[in-house]
Length: 583
Image 1 (cartoon, helix red, strand yellow):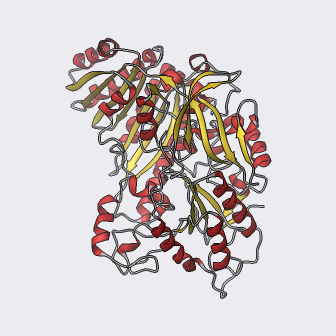
Image 2 (cartoon, helix red, strand yellow):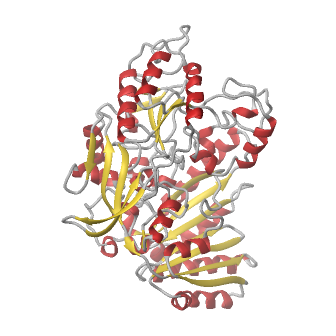
Image 3 (tube, rainbow, N blue to C red):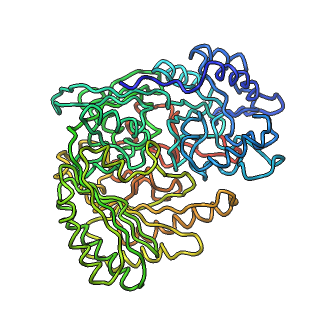
């Protein structure tokens, strides 16, 4: 079992506690409207003594939030240091500095340039959308204490694990954060229930994919998880459905859950499974994060490990017509791949290059993968397009992942991106391929900023996964999809917030183009936009009303909030950043 890891020293916790006074109220301002959460500066904001009592109740693990770039400025949060600031600049788009911080999140949009290392030392540095205090959670008791305090003091509550959140659900102005990242642990057991008997993994809520993958491999097992190795697996990832390279054999992460251990906003410590609090279990598997309860642990199916075949492929646009014709050929091949049990392809295309980042086929050899991809290689030759191509065979899944994920354990993913996308149904490729290719060409040819289109393709139908439509709250459009189409665009770290907002608006425009040709489909909410006006239909579909009823049952005060989460329209964000009841 991976032991609980305490990344913050006792001395650092004491030091951070001494900063709590910076969040003290000023009597010159007040908000007496109980329909709104209080912010620092309001007369009703908790006193230093009240924060001290909370700190004592959680064993001294209350941490004052501060912007990561505070040392780059003359500010109340940190002393200025040119040397420290240089290091922050160098690491600014790397995930570790965010998942090792209690309040800062990876999304540049939600950081909002409130405090950036790329402006002068005398420029503004504020908290912006960040939580002002965080509990470094070590147990369910810490969560219960945080929930109780937020309810009693009428302040916003957020839940942050790694900060892999592009919808703004793990941060919030003036919030108390429950930082679950250090609630680590991976253990294995033989699970037995009416629905499943076999190996299982219990993942504490802070467990990240790279930790789970390696520990599982050391035990002769594999567990479904994300493509990005630093994603936390037990919270918002599985709540959003959770896709990854093993989905072609085992389904989405939410198809694998056996039970959850949670704390509700009423302070109840519960188990949610198919036979106990089954409605909550259903909702937590695909019904969206940051809304029903706070996850302490997830128990999920583990699977016997074994050989995995892989491949990678690149071809460039040396002739526009031939290039896009070959991309159309690839789309048609996806329909063939869809019939291969276990097959997953993860690929990306711009107006210049197509890349198969990697294909995954568990239980197969290198030669098997070559046979599957050879017809498409012949197509590239016929179209006279130069390419690079290789296949691999690995003895286990972690070995396969290591082949195609540079710089493990963290990988080479960066944070300076905006995301959006659409689930592409099989029927669209079968019957409307010309319009789909034209739309993707248009998206990738947009302006000076390069929008890239990515795809993750596996057969996720109920017939293939082996469950029923009512097994969980996963958006039904997943079952009809040929692949998840993800768009990303990388932003200039020194750019303006206005430039970022322009790109966000363009991302929504791109999504709208895809909606026109996929009118009955939806989106993977974890990689979609927070401001999609059709979020209820696109992220939850026919499940929304049932999910809202479950939300009302387990979170009757609507304490848990995130943009485009179930019940989020109960709240509105005021001009000063506070949450206020919408009605």
